[in-house]
Image 1 (cartoon, rainbow, N blue to C red):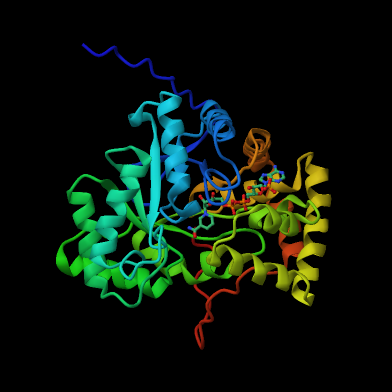
Image 2: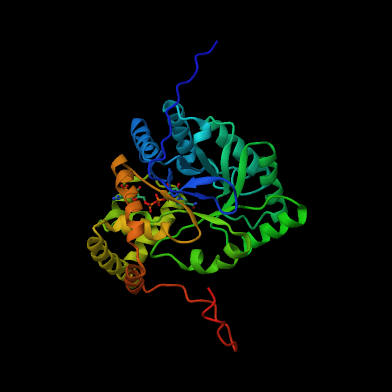
Length: 359
Ligand SMILES: NC(=O)c1ccc[n+]([C@@H]2O[C@H](COP(=O)([O-])OP(=O)(O)OC[C@H]3O[C@@H](n4cnc5c(N)ncnc54)[C@H](OP(=O)(O)O)[C@@H]3O)[C@@H](O)[C@H]2O)c1
């Protein structure tokens, strides 16, 4: 008879949990992702150190993707889950399908073939029977929406994932997915994994507003620190580009960001970060903690996915939980003045304002 596994017990500590959008699934307000770091710039025992510290501080949700380090992120994170003896029911694991691990003609995108083969391959790399959430990592306008919705529903029917969700889809594409799912009596996406931070607000706060209202989708926020810019540390992109094994996509992403920082708009962003650092100092926290607390308190945020190259960053960033209550209306107003980028509300022409006294 095989010896019973002694699992590492999960203690949520002071981590708040939220529902993932309209679902019954509870996710920690801060989770941990493996984009550039886990399996990429960080491999071996240091991956274990980072995930262990996260788990010990109440993070039980881990996010990865088939495309992260060409599958190595899933391999490394899966290995660590086993080595740490984490109980599967304690964990919320998400992965994402689209970018593939190689460039074969059907090895990327959202065809039924790749969604099904890709999810199967992700599970093999993770060494798991199922993930909790599978995301469509990008939209694929070359595939009929019905094929995409049916394929993700098939994955759910097979028990390979409990929910499916989108990442960086337009509001129109999310709307279409719901429409098709509704027409076919199938399950629609429950969350959107979107970039949302103090310097990137238009899409998550304005474009998605109607789909939040209609379907109550939650967001699993990525790059809450603008890949490090909102930590206030100097020269971070240059360091990153030097250290990362660049895929074409990652290279383009950072090349464009780096270029934009050298332009007027970029200079303005850096000035804003300096002013935010002053506000953070007044609140007795770091710029990173302020940025994380700010996005965590956004109404549609289900979880903020942290990225980290060292365990200390996880511990440091989780102190954002203590900053959330400090974000009073006055502080938020001060931040709003610095950011000066609040998306404008939808213009309503030729109508008197509705009753402002109605709660
Ligand atoms: N769906 C998507 O398309 C998508 C896209 C991107 C990311 N994601 C997900 O979101 C996760 C987080 O994204 P991200 O890595 O861009 O997040 P981020 O929080 O914006 O940046 C994380 C990076 O900032 C630096 N950092 C973090 N905490 C710090 C601290 N306290 N002090 C100084 N530097 C600090 C670290 O980089 P260094 O130490 O190396 O400088 C770390 O790797 C990813 O792992 C992934 O799971 C999803």
